[in-house]
Length: 345
Image: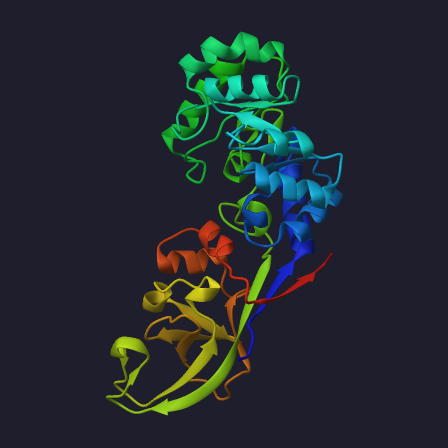
């Protein structure tokens, strides 16, 4: 079967990080969790380090271990999930900085790794990770005495700049941290775009690096081209694909392309989804199956060898809107069967 082609533009990743770093009043780190949002941390992280990123963020310790192998000694690697049970050896061996989320994690850390670097994550209102104000009040003097590398929190509604939650979290974070000496971080991509009040000493650009909203000025990073396997003429009354989900009302030329939900293309895309053949938008017909998708190519004078699902014509956020999700999920779902190529290194 023909293989779909996923192209990742490392020069665009570098440019997007640089643009967000230039907007930041302090230092800009880089979030590379989930295998650099599905695009390959082994390729992406060195480009970001070369561009100037000195502090990286991952979700869990095992991601940090992988990243340390990629980057070598030097860059600081922070772990959002903190010091979880069983993490001590990985944190020590890879010199990772856990972002401590609770009193229990703090106790675990000082008992297992006395003197090992750590950071603090505070809950400024998102109620997901981090210490609530009462926990922080009980622990802050002990924690600050050990010189945390970073004190951070996370905005819940930064993709909606006018949302009242942003100002509330900013005020809460300031109340919890304004009298401390440690570097602070509140903002990922959305917070960077809201301006200097949200920047503090360090920002954590993530999705914007990879070309996603809310960074509307981002350079596109990914191009996904799907090969056409076969075309056929379908007469009125004939159906296409599983479950007779689409039935022709007029004579229709249908192309079958090589990709499906096993490649991270969500089945919900069938309802509102399109691909592009050059400058022509082609509707998805019937269901997205495991390995194949059928599209309407009736208006094309010539059917191309491949069509675009992601790229200049259609962003990850366009596809995300069609399936009722966000660009993050589209990126991190991209499968392993694609022939991946990297440009702009």
